[in-house]
Length: 61
Image 1: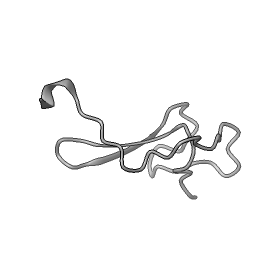
Image 2: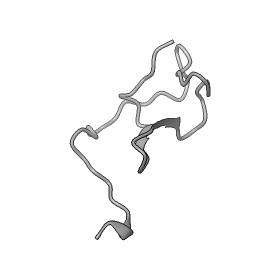
Image 3: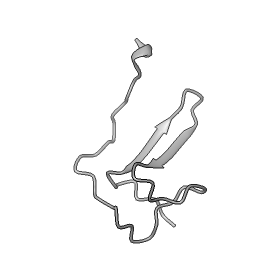
Image 4: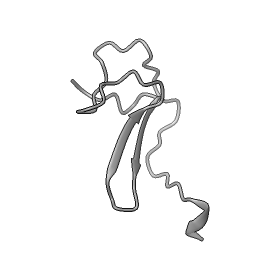
């Protein structure tokens, strides 16, 4: 199964230990290994690309 990384519900985060965590905001995915269901009913294309964005926590200042 593939991952619909262009779906607005897909989230990939990197922890402080450089571990990559993938999740689905609506929990429509298979947990381990992470995969989106084929023909997912909740798939919605992203309206804006998330490429190049960095999110920092308030403690990073």
